Length: 229
Ligand SMILES: [Fe+2]
Image 1 (cartoon, rainbow, N blue to C red):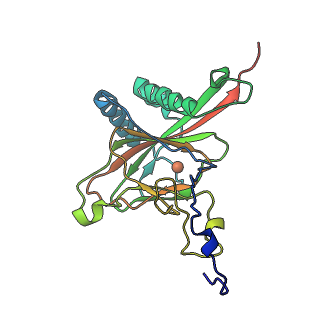
Image 2 (cartoon, protein in one colour):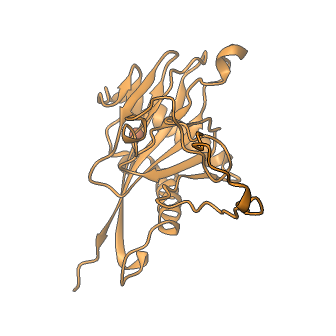
């Protein structure tokens, strides 16, 4: 920095104490369901059975089978337990002014994704909901080592994008962990992981390089004020 020939010597003892504060946090919850083996088996069985009788729908998925969003009607007790777990997580990161999350009726729409090798999900959001969640039943592993890194990764787009890249595309803000904040951070979940994030946060799935199908379950979670009787 140019100092215009001025002497800063009188201020040599000046020191700076700084503690950056992170405002505007976006909670992304990465949970692991423990003792979930029976749940995984039952969810897979329900999905395989449904796929055999339903053509599914086309949404953000490129390739693969995307069920209707009524999995709670055909997924049995396993689907109900998964929905209950996701709502429990959502309540932990939800606050309503002058009210409690328990004073709301929480709703879940659930669907299954069966992704073949090279399938992916394009960047999208889940409008008209508070939260989105994904549960991983089978990562469809078996990919080549060099492709394992990003295969099937869930990527999240910085909600400040593209504002944060407008002035200088190479510029990044340093986060509280001391690292530059990526515009599209990636998560590499494992079977049994449940990931929850705000429904407005745009996200997608990198191409799946596994040799077998990858199975995940997505949820739209909302909370409606309870009707007074
Ligand atoms: Fe999604």
